Length: 400
Image 1 (cartoon, rainbow, N blue to C red):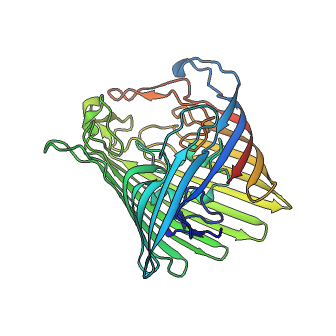
Image 2 (cartoon, helix red, strand yellow):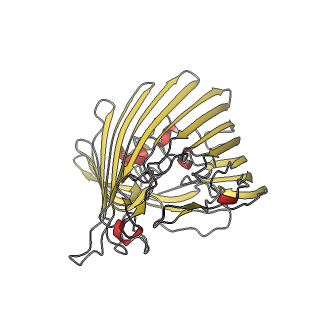
Image 3 (cartoon, rainbow, N blue to C red):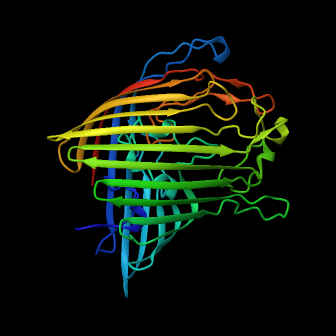
């Protein structure tokens, strides 16, 4: 059955994002993906007394990489207006607990002349603006191991979303979303958290470009905020963090290239732990950073060779707190629905950083960082600091 892409999913540069809403002539469509891999992972812990003095060894894993099952449908209301809905759930095929409606789940209205409005849980415009520019998206080598870092995830899927998407205007589409974060901040003394995310995306022939911005306003602890302050840091309430990024893509014959640049900032710094985080650099910005990612692919026959490099500079609070990651891989397409792949990836942390492969991406086969910060002193600890995690991954993806 022929499917057409909803306006909210136009963020894809070279491929249709599988999590996007689809519309068809039937009332209900069942769809999904199974994405599994066998990973040989080395956590690469630094044997350093200050960072935990921990040796490491390899671990073999069977990992789910964002498998999902969805139900979606439309109703033609006449005069170019349609009702749309989707319920999409994560499937953790490696045996972990799955979550009903944990992925993009919403109901809304779509009109050819005025765009789309939806309510529910959905990827933010900030996330959708560049997901298609990662050739290792939803694997252990996802570039969100470095990009999107913040107190809350910038490259995320938010609950309590009200979103609007413009119609496609000669290749340009605008997206804006409001996240109602402080739904239980009923007392006048409680700050109400929320978030705003917006993006503009342009796609014309081989060219793709996007510009996105997102801001998280932290509300009072325990009020259902976008990024709830912890019990030990209640006075992060009424603080905020924001980010912007630029995405560029180009496809020429068998080649495609992608580039993403990101800048994040926050005002979490304080003179004592009670007011926020102590910042060793004595400034308000604690986690803000500059980061970028290059990647490319070359297709031949039923195969594709892929490479990627991602790097972040020092965070606002600490020197020597950047990271870099490089990946090489090959895909083999048996069909449009079934692909196998192999890749190798390595992430190298600076002394005061603890990013992990598979972090915030879809893979559950990554390294879970154990790094922590003492908010009162600004001291960092954990075996993952200064680590160099790496992995070989062999996977299969099937769409249905």
